[in-house]
Length: 527
Image (cartoon, rainbow, N blue to C red; front, side, top):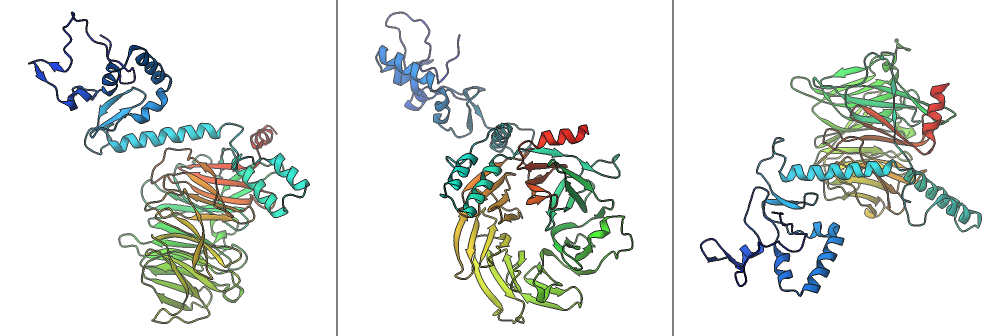
């Protein structure tokens, strides 16, 4: 006998004699309750929906056939209308309910967490397929390159607005290309997952941190170069350094020349204490073996963040954010200034025109320190202070230095006016619950980037907060596989082109503005 389905509208009845219809009765001649009429008995596949049966039994034949045809034509909408039953879930593909089993282990495929993970993976694959299409959806309605050029020629669009909108169109058309990392030891390919990548100011070098399978991590530098055809090549430096400690924060430091050193914050484990180290970039290449191994290093309990000052008055100064205090240190003289705070300092950045350090705390407080003032116990040295609702994970000072971007662990990204200590813009869509995630700003292109805990990379318009694009991760989402990105208007040096660099798992991907990047790469390989 054919099974009844709740989308089919009517349940087939067994042939019975005249006057023998036994609606509402079952074995034992006991009357079913109203609830039992709505839902049939439980079986291995779960309950079946019978609400439509009663509705059809009370309808004329003509209206019943009309409703049956309409329900079949809108089957895509009825899946969302299926009632939610405690302890069951509805599978729209198989068109029936299944019992949810207790437990959270990987051996049980019918837990709610596993079902949600399956749905997220399905959505990720769908977005990846859409990204492979040559023509993508415009970031704004009616926005395209030809229309912008026409408005510019007619004088209807200012030059700065034209450049910003063109970048928005280019960002929406970026396509993913996998990069091959060249190394002197090609017999030992990279199989360790990327944890963090940070580019220098020219984006010719990228400092990388990789997790090691046996514990700890390794770090080194990758060199990038671009050709006249627009292709990008990557080469890993010879020397890699291993440590059993976790790298919490990285920034480039300009000691002898721009980006000559790297500042590292290492968290202590077991009997190994944490430390902050200032390493010359030449240390990672065999071309200059006579360079000193370390310029400055000091032991600390736990360092959460670090920053290097580029202001001419304090151009050899760096800071570290610790548990309930901030340390500002001169790398040449060793002079140290300590500022006590009421919370752990998770994010830091210096302004350039004035020697002011901005700090973001676990409590959600954001405050600034003017290095020209000495620390006081009453915390009156805080030049400005304001709050967000959760722990601050990243702060970025804009070129104007009157505005500051801050992201927290609630997924909120806000643009603050430091003069009046009020938010003036919010960038919605970012997802974060507890991860320590940075944000990236590219003011020449007017773009803001952030990778969420859901492993999606999102790009916003810095001017009005409009979400321009959401890029899924090439690999399934996981808390230990969150992508790390670098965006630059000249990726690969002065001859480079704007593009996005993404490191996830042990792979490196390039999203160029150039739509025919693949063709140029193939030509170079042929030559």
